[in-house]
Length: 208
Ligand SMILES: C[S@@+](CC[C@H](N)C(=O)[O-])C[C@H]1O[C@@H](n2cnc3c(N)ncnc32)[C@H](O)[C@@H]1O
Image (cartoon, rainbow, N blue to C red; front, side):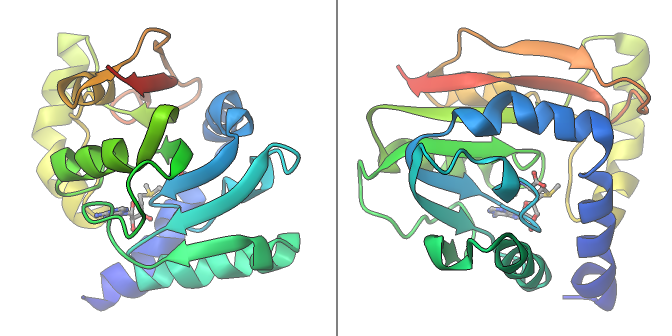
């Protein structure tokens, strides 16, 4: 791992992922989590403060990047919830949890980055209980050709500076391709944000 990836990317991402429009996106989904919750790619733990403690029985926070884990532990400590979170220091392609053990999987601004999203969503499906749900909000491919053509052009450079983040993934399609039903998905451009990174989707998904 290069010094850029180890030291700069975690700060860059934490900062970009805490903008006001992005925090509003998180607030649309994270408080709906209940039961045993698995957050995929928790990053620096920006969502932790948004969980409803009265509804969450247990929180597994999965994250493979050591620099992010350090930050996430610090966030949990500062919120006084360090003891109730179990960190899984690995990628979502191999989730170290039993089949049918999770009520809610939380996926925020992470499907854009996971290298093998197919395996990650297959694993998410495996660990979800029957009737369990994914709550998600992601940025991704714009439906407008004048934006998407720039997303395609910029993506190779963007990926290399932004920790592997893709601009052209369509998360709702990825969820559907992975066997999830996603009836309540909504989309919009984030206000006051560059459109190439600001086309967002959010909603819930359940195994078909
Ligand atoms: C843009 S950040 C978002 C972090 C967090 N989900 C949030 O909403 O702030 C993307 C995160 O995905 C993590 N990531 C990268 N590869 C991953 C993988 N294979 N499985 C799970 N997370 C991964 C990165 O380390 C990073 O923390």
